[in-house]
Every structure is written in C-alpha cells, then in structure tokens.
Length: 361
Image (cartoon, rainbow, N blue to C red; front, top):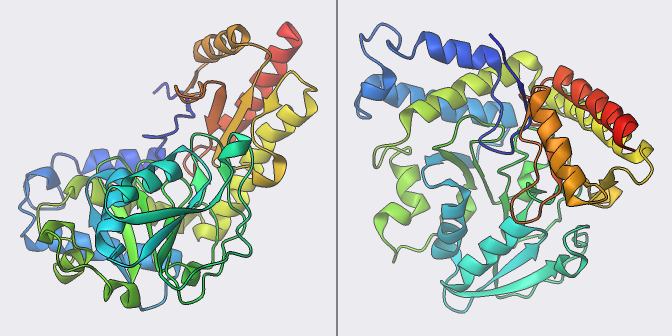
C-alpha cells in the first residue's frame, strides 16, 4: 500500500486502522448477511449502532447528563440556517462573532431568517487575528451567541471560550472537535460536520443541552426542529448510516489513543513541527495568522509570490504530499494536521519545507 501524506482540509485523513476495519465489514456487517448500507434504518442493528455512537461521543467528550447528541445531514452549512430557524424568534437577536469565512457565512444565513448582529469581528484585519471575546457586552434580547472555534480556511483558533452567562453560546466546532480539551458546559449547543476529525463526510454531529432544547421554535417544519431529532433519537428520517458507523470506529480509535487529552498533546507537537520551520525561515515562509491566534488544526502560510507557492505545491505532490494548496478564495498554503494525520507526516513536511527553502531561498 502506497499511502501518501494527506494534509487535505476536509474531507480529510482518516486513521488507517479505522479504514481497514470499515473495509472488513463493508460487504457484510456483523453476521447480518448484508452491508450496513443495505439495512433498514428501522432495524434493531441500526438502532443499536446509532445509540451506541451517540453514547460513545458523550463519553469521549465527557459531557454532563443534560446534553443530547443528534446525527443530522446537510453539513455545518445547514446548521447555519437551522440554528437561526430554531432559536431566532421575534424580538430576539442572534449575536455573531466573526473570525473567518465560515463564521461570516453563518451570520449572513441568519440574516435571512431574523435579526442578527455582529458582536465582534476581525474582518478589518483580514482575519489575521481573532476578535477579543473575553468580555462581551450582551443585551437582554440576545437569543444566542454564535462563534466558530477554529477557522479552517484562515488557520486561526480560539484558545479562550467566553462565558456568556444565561445567554446560550453556540459553537461551530467542525474543524477542531476531538482535538483538545474544552469546558463544554460553556456551550448550550455545538455542532461539527464529520469530515475533519469525526469521520467521513455525510453526517453532522449536533450536541445540545436540555435547557436550550426547550426554546426550539415549534412553528417551523418538523424536519428542521432539533426537538424532532431528540424525540426520534436521530431516526426521524433515514440517517447517513454508514457515516455514523465510521464515526463510531473513529471514536473508538480516539479512546485507544488515550482520549482527547492524548490527542491534544499530540496535536500541539505536530503543529509545532511545522510552525517552527515557518518561524525559523526568516521571510521565506510567512505565517498568515498572528501567533496568539494560530490553529493547531490548519496551519497557513504565504511565500514571496504566487509562482513560488505554485512550485512548492507541485514539488510537494511529486514528493508524496497532498492538500497543501490554500483555499481557492484566499490562496497561499495550508497544512491541515487533524487527529488522524500522523506525526511522521508532519515531520516529513517540515523536512521538505527546510529542503525547499535551501534550494529556492
């Protein structure tokens, strides 16, 4: 098997042993005589898989009893709309922390549904830093505060989660869930599309606390209500069964590695290998995000011109790397070092970067 160094931003690298385990049960799941993808979502086997995976996520995150796990379709982009549809009622305002492209998309989507305002923003700094969130002035008509904990495109990550008191805090954790320890009790709800750290694309995990669940808007279509998914244990309609199964395997893998604490320690080390090369290169590699705001998951940098960046990507691909080109809207370079990206890949990238500078500096 010739596995390359996969630094794609999502869909992204999955643990090899998870892929191999999924492969073994692809044609026949358990002793049921058929693939999981062929089974009715009303079957006992699928019901059990669904419940076990929900419970496993609760255990891996060490969530208190008052949180519910939902599995939904549509990716994080659908949650941009559903958050507002469920909680942005008349007379209430959604307050948004803008720290990158996806947080801005969530804000724009909310404006199509109700009253949404910008609470804090770093757009004027071209997303090179994070807005201050330690102290937030929140008015009484605030429905919720929404923030994106890690910005996949720009390469920034909040190290501090604000305390919003009695006002619900909603987090988009698509690109850093499972990567580090957090005080989950600060969030009334958080969600993550699976295709970064949780599993393959096709399913989104939503974690919601009971007190916020009581505030769901009951005047929207049934399929859009969070309460519907809680009531039916995410089986109101046909779920992405195979993606949920793969999440279960990934969660079991995380537990075997030592849990989130071990993942965090490893992720700090992996990101440091690449950031150290950037910082030691003089002006050859230029980090896009200011140091206090840097992400462990998505490491971004620029070079002196686009031609040199293009050459870097081309040479990296010839040397067994993939996914190092920056997002099409911003350019530059990006290495997404999610949980499943091994230390060896980050070491190899650091060595390649040093060698490339020697030959082109």
